[in-house]
Length: 160
Image (tube, rainbow, N blue to C red; front, side, top):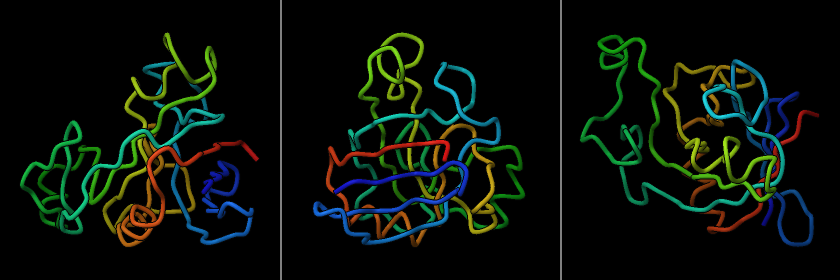
């Protein structure tokens, strides 16, 4: 299984092992564009794998902080209470770079930057850049994707 994320199209395509398209999803990558350096708030390019899947069995809109459920369930009221919070909801697919010096090791390490594919509030716009570096998805979409892809699935992030 392979995932391709197009920053230009703000879309993810999921391919099976024969290269056939299984699913397509709208996403939201970084508002600051693409880049690999730690602290840049940019989405890293290149080849990655899903190193860990976090949140199996949690209810939709479960709030995560540091990859742990907080006990909160996101709602518009909670969103209004904490307007500046970067919401990581429902499920997390933690990415690890595969290209030393590009998105792995040193100051460009995707995993050490805590770059995820994760769920977002329903109010988060898809199809437009808006994240702090991660790849945001609608909650229903991340639940479907989480159940579809195994750990170590390939993820390619390109600018095209």
